[in-house]
Structure formats: C-alpha cells, structure tokens
Image (cartoon, rainbow, N blue to C red; front, side, top):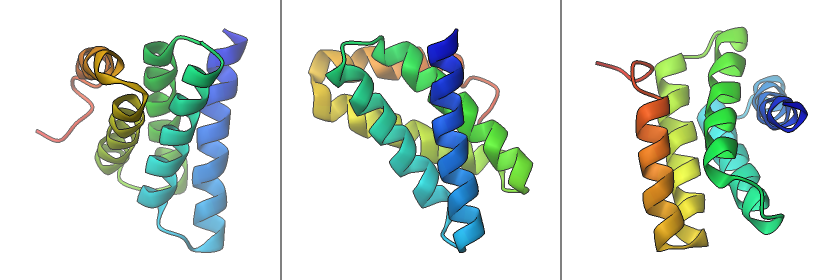
Amino acid sequence: MATEKAVAQVVAGAVEAANEAGTDAGVAIKSSVKGVVKGASDIRADVGKTAVTAVDGAVKAAAEIGADTAEAVEHATSGAIEAAEEIGTDTAQAGRNVLKTAVKGKRRK
C-alpha cells in the first residue's frame, strides 16, 4: 500500500509542478507515468500494478488542477504502454490487458 501511495504521489507531483510551470499537463502525465513504470521494472516491482496506480494518480492530479480527466487517462495510458513496450513484448501485452480493465469507464465514450 505504501508503494502504491508513493507512485500516485510521484505522478501527481509531476502534474502539479508542470501546471505551476505552465507546461502542458499531458506531457507531464505521459512522461511521469512512463518513467515510473520503467523504474518499477528496473527494481522488479509489479509493472501492471504500478501502471494502474500511476494512471489513477494522474487522473486525481488532473482533477485537482482542473484538467480534463479523460485526457489524463489517455496520456497516462499511452505513457504506461510505451514503457511496457520498451521493457519487452510480454510486458507490453500484459500491461495492455491490465490497463484495459483498469481504465474501463474512465475513458471518453
């Protein structure tokens, strides 16, 4: 639980810092989620769980700064999938499956 909270805080911090600096929140979301997921792989943590937690953190942070949460889901998911693809084919497929279930209902219809 502590790890999940930390992951969400890292992503939220990046989004909030980008907002304060006037940087595009979408870029911050995608980059921070991608970095967190790759980092999880480096330390042999659960990449799927990290990706889901990072996406959730991005959505919460986007809501707090008044950004579009559906766009946050898109950017976060894109970052997580890019990271998973760089990690490996099996990880990419597993990541897609986990994220597909986790973000159901959070995307635009």
